[in-house]
Image (cartoon, rainbow, N blue to C red; front, side):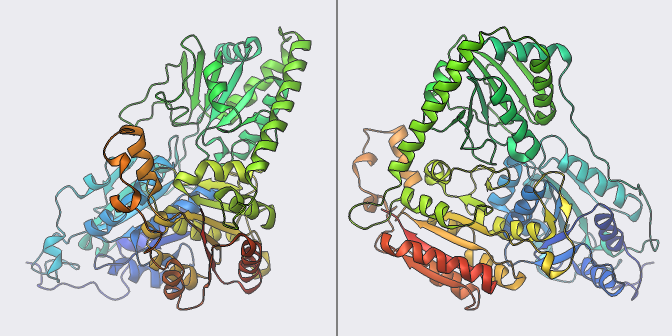
Length: 608
């Protein structure tokens, strides 16, 4: 008969030790952690590893799950390397909230581990129930909480399958349409004795599943379609997950003169703004979609919104994607002639090879004329965007003036992390990104991502040289080898609040991950007003002003700067700016604080 109130013998190797060993062998750098009563064996195993000189993965403590998963998301997005998030049973899993949604939609490889309520209550095993709340936390089908978003879910029950299960979870989290995987274990399972230095399920390399290119016949099909097209168009959204793919797309645009490129989603820098083929919404993207005769969609979830714009009915559409079936979407169809589950970097290389080897059937004179037209159109569009950047005559700050000023002042190698909602289009148009890796935005619609993601981006850049993502190179561990790249978090005022700023700026201070935050204060919920106008343009709500609807924050909004400074224990530099004449000086001062003093800095900018 089991002894009541069983406890684990001090120094015993446990399943938790095997779990951490498996993560270390898989190359996990950090444990983005919110601790709870289900984690004592993990803490014990972690301390044992530290005392034995096994310093990886490193545990980072957070005060909210949304910030923890957003930080892991940012790290994974910047490097394409999976990270681990540790949360507390069902309640911690639930608190991941919109961060889980963003990691799924943003294809961020993260392994989430959560404990489960102990499965015994009379002390039969080490880890048996010992707290009142554990009866409430015994939720049936806990994994169902993450089911709409996870690529894989399972429960660790014994030492013998831990490494196999971790490897399986990481395979599912990183392959194809990357995203969250979810593992759980009870306290009893984690505290169970295991063989010291367990090698169960060990392999020298973590399994990976790589996509290939296209069959030769389909390479010919798409290549010929592009060559013969009069108005060819490429639409992308997250091609920048591979920097080499961006460079190959530039080569293709140089080769197929007349080809235009539209980055509809702006989730990764996927095509340089200084190329004549580059389109934005303001510079002709809608017309290009409406008139295209051949459209190639490369790594994009939503290439157009059919109620607003779509290609002609007779356009030939080809779709190449790591996630062409959009398995986490209930409704998706772009009427593609052919759809391919393939790696766009390889496909672009195939297209370049075929087109270079083939004799172009298009008239070279026509292509030269189209190339010249693209140049003229690009210059005209750039001039129009520059005109928009001018400061309002009344001395206030417009969103376009703010973004262009940021672009003029911050270093060219700055990495921007944005969550600006209704300002996303003018932001990307004014920033004019030209280098792969210079910008990432949240993958989905869960507001509040950017603060935590900036922490993850800062950690990632300090450990990895990401200039050839996903083939990142580890930096040396010495202080002088840390990246000097500035990380700038751009967020809307609503997104700032949703991101749990008290937890963000405490973590920024505690983890010494200095970055520049800029809050765009537009005085209310502009996205709500936009949706009202879309659905009921002549309705009753459209006639009510923002204050009447309760979505106006111009006169009684939160003290955003005060919240962040207080959360950082007073270490954060914070300033509110509302006049155009003060903007340049404020940005320069904040940049110096981050780069020279290695402290966080935050600007709240009031825009008209």
